Length: 455
Image 1 (cartoon, helix red, strand yellow):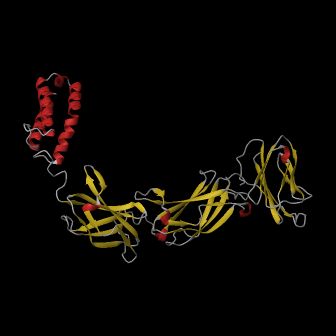
Image 2: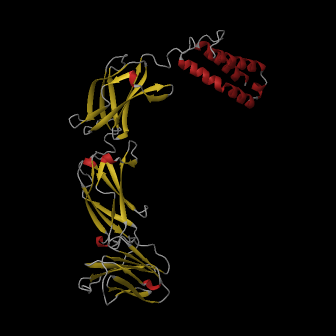
């Protein structure tokens, strides 16, 4: 691939795209401010020779690249670009020369007829271009319908917004959509169908290419397609699309779920109504996709996948089609067999970031249930254990900060006693001072009041 190189002082880049070797008796001349260059390709059998004649005002280093039709590449870096190679190909083809002399860029096209062993015509076109700086892109529709194909026309531009007729770079495409927060994220491939991931410009494109039916979108979102240069990702252009002309950030950012009954008992069947809504809870009547259901259970402070033995779920997937208008009711879809805190999460099969959930408390919750310590619930016991863990450091820090607290014997005695009394509960001692949580809380308030008054 021959690309425009960055400008360097007193440097020259010469490239050939040789679709066919040729016999020619006359050289092609290119006139620059600092040099006149005459280039010729000579042919003897299957041997082709590149000959360069230079008349310059200063020393010029020359590098030549020749890209042949079969993809082979010849790099020429010896003095004056003198080189020979073998290539067997017979057709009338265009040879395009790319030359940069001290930042001045020009292009020449010549045609050779190998079958007739002569140059066919002597038409020459010369243009001046700079380095790639930007792309201009037009599309056939920015508010396409769902599944409507869109054409892209891409134009490679230099810093002066002129078309780079010799651009032969590779452009790539990526697709993003807006998420629930209005931020751009990479779109799942299930949201669109891209005909190709990249396109290689060649010399015959003259810096402009129209790609027909490049993409179609399968979901009603706001999308943007990024077109960028493969060698320099800082050169890119975004094209924005509003599928079906909805002009919204996201038509189905979450699911609203209701249940009947709201507070079911064990083994009681539950109906679920699921509705697709946007971030403002406005229903999306156009939502059509497959939903998945997952049952989770609260274990301590974590959510885990609930064992299937604890519930009976009729279907793990639900299809919403255009007849549902974004809302569907499922009858008797689930029942729970155990007590506990459960959550049903409903999410898009192809995008787990689009979801909703509903929580059920079946029977007595773990936190409110009786612990293995009589007269203390699990929640109450957890609080006592938490305070017991941090108590020594809290007392130590307060003593370091306040002189009166450091020298109060009664405070030291009572805080030590309180610490021991908590240990009695945690270790389930039969002689414990606190018979229940109220006793513990009253003792805690006494120590707190004593600390404030002594400080």
